[in-house]
Each structure stands twice: as structure tokens, then as C-alpha cells.
Image (cartoon, rainbow, N blue to C red):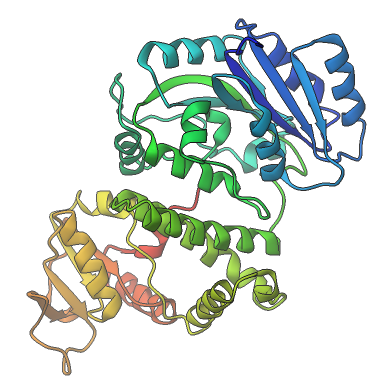
Length: 417
């Protein structure tokens, strides 16, 4: 019987001949030598297939799978995971690197604490000054407060979300294979942004998890990568599919977690971000397979085209508002009511709803007074949340600016990465 290796490293490979040597060398030079490296050639059109075969000939730890046709990253990762024989799994992209002690450190920690998963941090290298300038805000490492302890996965996820430091980068995660297989966690195939789903499901189901601030993963920003490619129909389609899968996961697993629901809303925000760019050029409904998906897509199109939709209040906005002595909500309609409920859940009690003309307004909405803008003469240490739809928001903000009234527009605070 073949001895189980300690770690399986799965690397999908496509069109990266310039970077592949450095990637593989960083893995094979690990201080932990008891590993296997499964490289999945996704029908790469360059010299990558030959490079992989050369490495496999030189090092018995390297296994190469050559796919007959390009099938995208999720498919390649899943094929590698299917044959992985390691106790633990690490996923790396073929243009990136890891520090020499990465796998030994993570394996030792996982064994010591019997962990299902470990989340850690990264560093960044750029192929050009232009890329460095453009992607300078990449969240390479976390700066929040985390205890040096074993969490449940859900506890750790909540801590990430509450400190606005959840990232889906699977290259910054380490997984126990037995856990993944028991919970049937795989990458959703057939669309982009599959990284959103895999760790979301994994961390919420993990019984034992840890976070380490070690910056083991070395992420490369280069031209023509997934991270730097432009907007395309696949972006909206991918996020739409992720959104449906994440909702289905929470429902079928009976998971009730506001932070998880918030993360799903973040995916919805990404759909909103990409939709305006695409709506006049593409009709994506033909890409959806089931009648239910087609129906939901049509509903989404209608909601966007009528400019009347609800985007949740972000955690960052809540934290911003807690810094002020007084909070007002401009607009006492449906969006304003939704924002009020979100604020009350976080113990932020607005002083009043503000409206331009309250002639047809009640005295109170959900026990919060409704006042005209002229009724409030002191906005010291106060903040006004503009709760109107996009159609009216610009006009309202111009009015507030003309009166030097401090304000925020809720959508400016939605998480976008």
C-alpha cells in the first residue's frame, strides 16, 4: 500500500510558460519534502505541457494531467483534487510562488491542532510599475485583531467579515482532504469566480480552523491574468452563478448566519457592478440552463433597469456611523426603512428621518421622527445617510452639499473586493 504523503499541491496550468519554472521550483524546494505536486495542464497552447513533462521526469513527486481541451480553472482544480493522495491540500496558481517553509509550517500547525483549515496572508510582486500603481490596494495581509487560538470555521469567518478582512483567495488557505471529501466541497465548474464559493462553503462547515498572519503566498500581478483582465460577460455570469449557489448552500445546509448572508449580498453587489457595462451589449439569458435561472436573471434585469433595488448596508458603513453622536437617514421610503432596520440591529439609533417636504409624511416612521431638512439647525458631530435610489441620490447629495451638511451615500460603502 502506497504511503500517504503529507500535502498534495494542486496547480492548474494555462499559458504561463514565462512563470511556470519559478512556480514549480518554489514548491519543490519546500522544507517539507513529503509532498506530491499535481499539475493539470488545461490544454495550454504554449510550452507549458513540455515544461511539466520535464519536471515530472526529473522529480517523482510531480504528476501531470493533460486535459484534451481547455476547461477552465475550476475543472482543472477538481481533476487534481480527485486524485490527490495527501492528508492536506494546498492550491496554487501557476504564475505565483510560495515561501520555502510554507507547507511545513502549515502541516505542523494543522497536525498539532487537528485543523480542518488554516487561513494565512500573502505578499505581492508586480511585473511593472504600472501594475503596482493600479493594484496598490490589493489586500495582501490582514491588520485586524485575531486571537491565537482554534476557532470554529464560522467563528473565524464572522471575525473576518466584521473586520472587513474576508478574502476568497484559495492560495491563502490550507485544507484537510478528509474534511473536504466528507463535506463534498468542490469548485463549481463552468463559470468564473469559483473561488468565491469553495472557501465560503468550507469555512462555514469547518469545525476547527485557525488564522496565521504569516505572509507565505507570493502573488504575482501580471498582464493578461484573470486578476487583471477586463470586464466581460463571463464576469457577470460568474457572479450570478455564485450568488445562486451560495444561497442554495445556506438553505440546504440550514445555516443561519448574518455574516454569511452579508457576504452573499457582496456577490450581489458585484453583479450590480458589472451589469451596467454589459446590459446594452449582451443578453446573457441564453447562458443560463434551468428555467429557474432564466427567470431569476430576468427579474434581476428588470430590477436594475427600473433602478429600484435594495443593496444591503455594509459593515463598513455601520462602523463609520458609530463614530458620530447623531445619525440621520435622508429619505423615509422603503430603502430608508430597510436601512433603519439594519442600523437598529447594530444598536445605531437614528435621531430622525429627514425629508425635503413632509407635507404628506407621517410624524414618525417605525417610531423614528420624520423632520424636514430645515427643522434641524445643528449637524455638529452628525452624519446623514442618503437612502434614496440612484435616480434621486445625486440631487439629494447636491442639496446637502449646498448646506454643508455631512453625509454619506450608502452604496459608496458597499464592499467591492
